[in-house]
Amino acid sequence: MPANPLRAALSALAVSGTLALTAGAALAQSPPTLQQYPLSDRVFGPGGAVFPDYVTPTEYGTSFLIGGNGSRSALFAAGTADMNCQQTQVPSIRVLSAPATGKVVIGYGSFRATGIDGGASTLCVGRVAKGLVVSFKGKAAPGERIVLRVTYPPRGAWYDHTVAIPAR
Image (cartoon, rainbow, N blue to C red; front, side, top):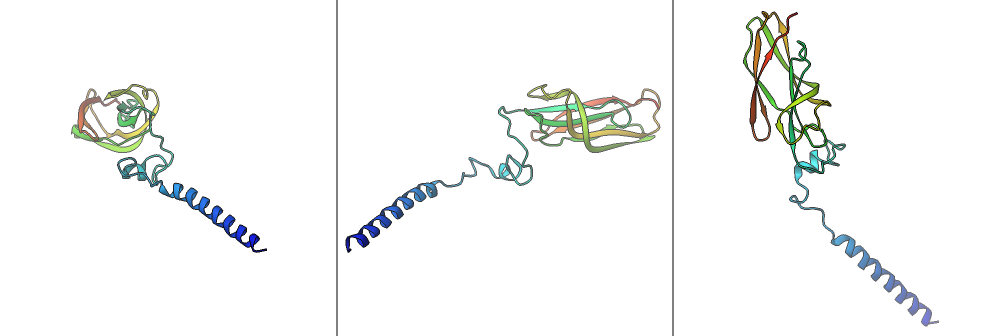
């Protein structure tokens, strides 16, 4: 009978040693470094805490989209998108000149991209995008215009746009 307890002890030792080796290999894998998986991606990127549905595009590039339907409620619009047509960062729009008889309103919203100011691709033109939408409230004489400066992040590229105000 002494052979059975010895055999059981050796068998248990062999099983625990195999488990330790297997677990050791699994534990040897460390989480990715901040260079491999940057903090911004951990929070905002794929599987991140803020934008869990965001998919990292296979190609690098950002398009500076413009649009607007020409009506007073959406005279002009601007936004940025990656190669999957997902919104990236919101540009800033500054009014350089406008009629004194009305008010220019700039707010966040959706628009149909009709062109690009610059960037990597025209793939997103014709699609709905998100960004800043410019509208005009008040009176304007026929032919009056608004001059806008759109600055796109992160590099600060800027473009000026002159937008005609439609008659009521």
